[in-house]
Image (cartoon, rainbow, N blue to C red; front, side, top):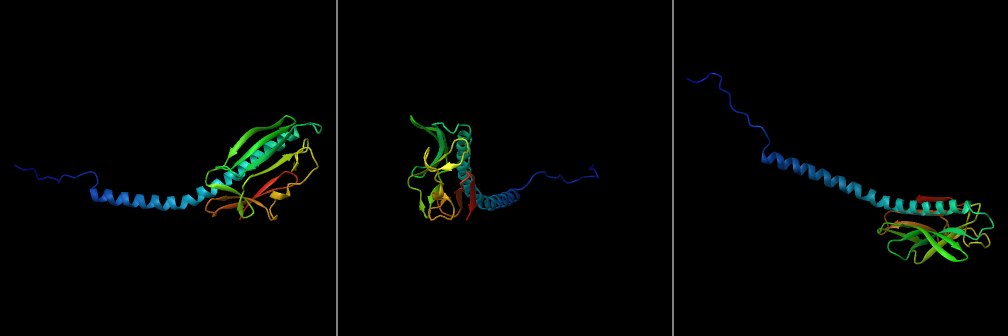
Length: 182
């Protein structure tokens, strides 16, 4: 005799169509998210390059402030635009020559510009002993580093290779570096 309480069996799990629909929705959302994140990542590379310049300048200023005014060692920054990737280099110049203390390489998708042209060569400045103020010539007459100030025809900027993200960099006479997106 049959039982009066016969129930149909339930299947657990998902069908192939449900799985395909869920994967399609997930991949569409991931694609939309990636499209929104890519510009942020490019912009971040410009910010990293500006921070590398700032870090090199701060270290040069710190080393210079620790030196007596009569010292022969000068600490500075050299921006190298004719290398891939572009770089900010912390240097020490003394009577025996110049020595590299640290090198801060930029991302390959970022380039230094002076005015409207890529920087082809180098820009250097040194910090005066005791004060840390930047000067274009070590041990010589104090010359403000106006060649890299915003507003000058030869202003310095960091840009992505496609030019979509740019940041102007100014080195003020007191040694402070300021960056502004444009």
